Image (cartoon, rainbow, N blue to C red; front, side, top):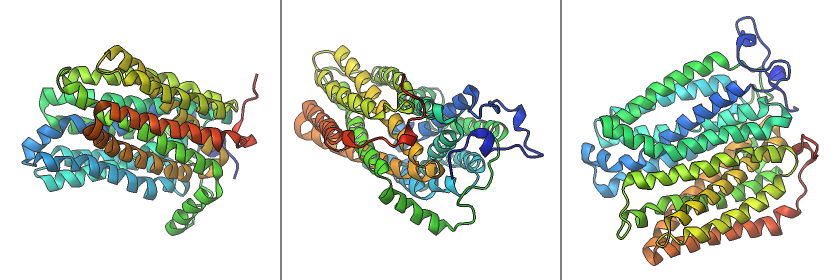
Length: 426
């Protein structure tokens, strides 16, 4: 099955007036309005995962959970996310992605209400696991957009949507803290539930129906087996999965531990001041959205190599945390730009390799992202306990160096499949 444009993939039916919806039916490309809507939907969804981090202490006090046990909220959310990547995302290659997206967002709203009204720790933990499980709607949206966009705009489309994801990650902590100050931690989740319901209604209206997919009629077990087979068959997926694990381990090493030296003497910064780092990181991440356009032009390998070099260099100013916070801000912009440039390039390349299997490919790829994020968080706190902030920086730089060496020794020598380059180089 070849890559299909929106016009080919979503013909209007009698009750599906797609001609009235904001998309370019002549060119088959997704309209900027739908791409922006996808980015907002992904930002809201990913924020549900990260908004708990600044609320853990108030959650613990309200529900009588010990400080040592409240950390399981984050763990259960990530566990739910991992299961969703393996068990739900591949369904995008079997079911109508429109229905899958809208259904997941509606169920996410229900899970958020469960969290926001939780009377005890057990209900809270179950609700957070469900929030993580259903947040993988992000990957279903990316697959929908990647296969619906015109081939020459695939990477740019993924980059724009990914900017929404990054915005959600970096702004979630700030927004949840502000809402909690106004109405308590429960208000954060109940507000998010309302927003998710509104988003589900909007997407149900604007998204076109899709025809039966190539795997329609296959069993769920066969779908999961084919997902494992894709990992064995596609070298670009294996290579890019390794990059996902390494770059997000480095990314997580910084963001999971930077609060420790900033909040401690002699700096003793407030949570609001620490949250401003996210704004700096957002600037770098948004600047990387156009890296997908470079992948569209066949420059994915060079973009990857230069971005990995920038990520390694970014740890040098970050190591100067106790000397200059301005240097740290510069390092944050460098690392966030580099990580997102590689991430967008990765997704562009793996979807271009097998567009008809985009949901399964992205699901497998994101499992490595999740593993890398978890390992980076654990390793960085251990490094900080053993060697302070310089130990964290050494860890992050080492992971970045391994990623760069992997690109130099293995990946840079691998030719990019012809199908990946959809726009002739100027």
